Image (cartoon, rainbow, N blue to C red):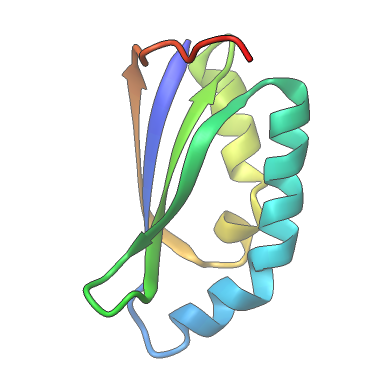
Length: 98
């Protein structure tokens, strides 16, 4: 199953600082998801000034429970970076084989 995850950051004064402190650990997790074939695409959502305010992810897992287990352990969740997380099942356009 494919999923689109849209996660908006907390908006308090320390939100960006928390994001940056957790960023390397979060990206290490993304690298693992890539190696496992779960991560299809994603990146930061930016405001009009270019400041990171959230994330979007395209992921593939056998079911929602497997996705939820990964999200639960993401440093952006445990580190209080993501405030509002929306998960929707999706059917993404296949990328051409490299």
